[in-house]
Image (cartoon, rainbow, N blue to C red):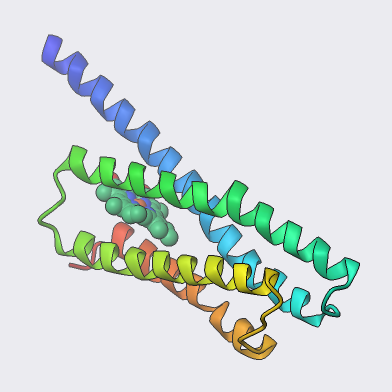
Length: 152
Ligand code: HEM
């Protein structure tokens, strides 16, 4: 009886952690969709203008309030889920971790790019930013297939 209750409590905790994981995944990916779009609009503003200053502030808030905290929480909860179910040896998890690492690298690149923009540099064209903006969508689709279909 006691082990049965413990089992129920554990699976309930697991379900709550998984729900929180998916909620913060949504915040993270939504923010990653928005950030390069902000940069595209930012780059259309005249350097040094009031409009440009507004974009710098919006971008800073999106990074510091939404996407970076969401990424950290997704990692912590995802690693907790993997530990609870003991999935470390599973191939789908290795593939997922590789993709999430690449997505975190993309995140880091976009955060750094925003800091360059705020300093007045504009290293990449609007068109290239729009193309790069496809990366999180593709990564999210592959990651969801890996964790739900678990093809291997
Ligand atoms: C940061 C590293 C991550 C780790 C270590 C991780 C790990 C995990 C684990 C172990 C599960 C539970 C799987 C199960 O119960 O069968 C899970 C669930 C899930 N993860 Fe992640 N995850 C990470 C990031 C992400 C990202 C970036 C996405 C989406 C883009 C994502 C989407 C999901 C979804 C949709 C589920 C629920 C699947 C289900 O219904 O069982 N995860 N994750």
